[in-house]
Length: 92
Picture: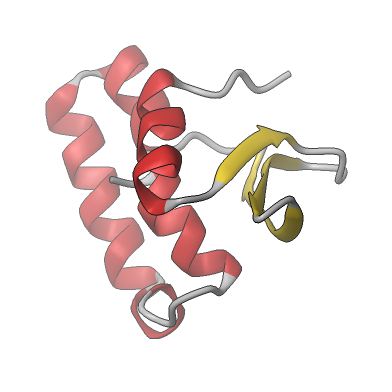
């Protein structure tokens, strides 16, 4: 089961959203804005920046982050999309 990192919770607060453990199969977190669910993000079967940083070190985490951002460039910049929230919450 995925445990939401403190960094993710802090970033969510800064963005004006809240996060909870996802009720959707294979997703890490559900993102809520004004009490309404706006996205389910992060595949629970894969690592994110915070997990890489904890398990594999900063160098590996930064490389995976760079590759993630390249791979998702087209969608992660569209405000309000699940990809946007994944980028801001799981890969920052």
